[in-house]
Length: 153
Image (cartoon, rainbow, N blue to C red; front, side, top):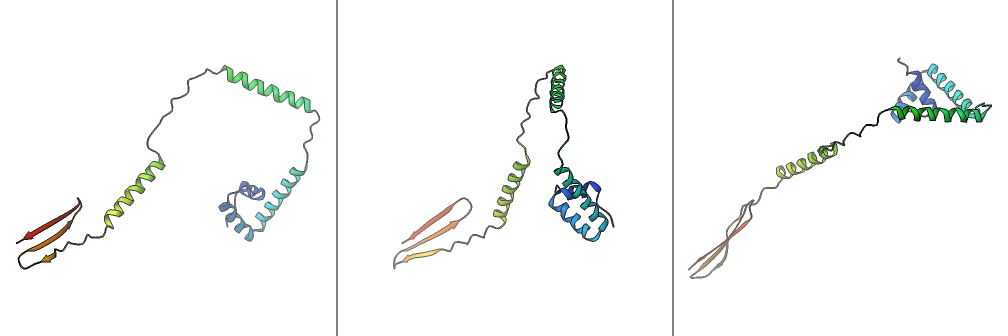
């Protein structure tokens, strides 16, 4: 049986693991008493640290040290040469754009492949008199609709 790392057990004890990692360690703790005891120890240590107050005798001395460290950091930063910021690189390609374009191409392809077949037009005789015939046919294609009228006398 492989045991989780000590760091993962400590993070589990404080509740700082992702839900997936927490689930795996929880399953392991059900079977391993050594790791369960280690997690309990980490929880006790965490509770002790949270309940104890830091013992600082001279707050003014601490504040002076912090100000000195900040001043030192600012002076060190002033020694560095100031460089111009790098020009921002703009690109039209991004993962979101690629996903949107791929989705659009998929929809167009699906529309072409799944398009229902167009029914073939049938000529329709509209009127038949003794001396004349009128016929109308409709042709539907990709460019448009063509209506043909035929008159005979």
